Image (cartoon, rainbow, N blue to C red; front, side, top):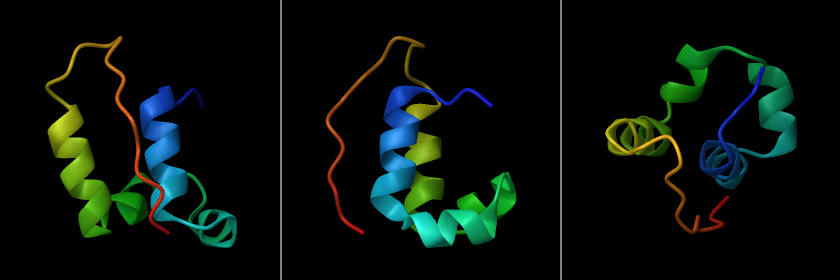
Amino acid sequence: MAVHPICHKTIHACFTNAELVRIGADRARLLAREDMARFVAWVAGKPPDFNAPVRQKR
């Protein structure tokens, strides 16, 4: 599954690799985290080529 670079960076900023292994490709479980849900709502209105810095916060 292809993931936009800013989304990929944000996922890794919010989750450890171990958490991602447990979650798998379950979109609902990713969005259950408030910070991911806020990010998705924010980025939804951006153009496809949008990019911005991502804070590393794990």
